[in-house]
Amino acid sequence: MTLLRTEIGDTLRVARRRQNRTLRDVSMDARVSLGYLSEIERGQKEASSELLASICEALDMPVSVLLREVADKIALSEGVLVPDTVPDNFEQIDVPGGVAKRAFAQQR
Image (cartoon, rainbow, N blue to C red; front, top):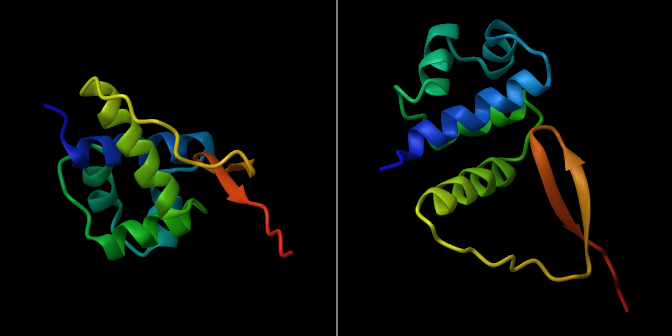
């Protein structure tokens, strides 16, 4: 069984390492102790939604991207096919920690 806190921690760690940042850097920016951030990354502690938002902000990563990546990993481990529900008129953009899609603002 896959634990949500484990997947969240793994995804946060990958995002931090992609940016070549240390636990100390991110913990200072997120205003959380280095030890607690380490426990979150290792899946030993569950972060509150407020703390996740703070960590994501420190990583310049939208919470929605974190949650989508975690949901996709869990779905894959459960053997569940999750169809892409994003319309074709969205633009793919690179964001720290992953890829996201942004809607074209088409006012007609």
